Length: 222
Image 1 (spheres, helix red, strand yellow):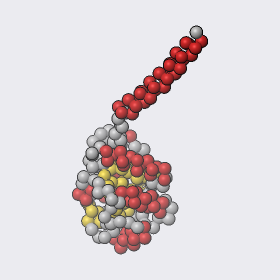
Image 2 (image 1 turned 45 degrees about the vertical axis):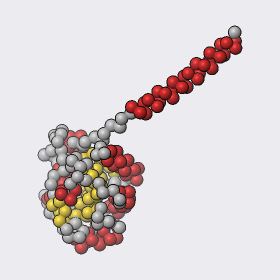
Image 3 (image 1 turned 90 degrees about the vertical axis):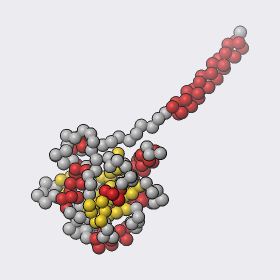
């Protein structure tokens, strides 16, 4: 009798184990990755968003732009058409967080160097200092690949508006001349000019997340 009960005990243990494996396999097959969120102004830290759009709940996209890069070339939204890209705001004379941000952006550059779908875009928040020549010196020093990464300068108001009305990543310093308090935020932009991720540009762990999200975003276009 005991032997008979033991046989059934072993049978049920094996059955439970096999059932667990089958359920796990089915779950893996049926599991569908959720798409990355689309960031809207009303869901972002209000200090990073211009007051005129803080209420906006949908249809937010990056505005058209016209800036000058480290080679003196005009860079517009057309250079980024049908591209995924990572954007940030920096200045070349910054001695605090900018060198770290640039190192992290360079790390991203190395990861996407052979990926034709992905580009980088860094905007100067001190355009009156960051001339084309200054940007070029910085680009050479930091190992910027001109085919993948544009460092841009231009009209201060346009850069201010891009930072606070498009990318939603920079604080206002409350001055009258479109002043910006530099922040460490990186933005991941999709092919429809929508924000799909915001990251801490001085945190290696956050950049790890960005790189993973980039891979996931690319799957949406496959």
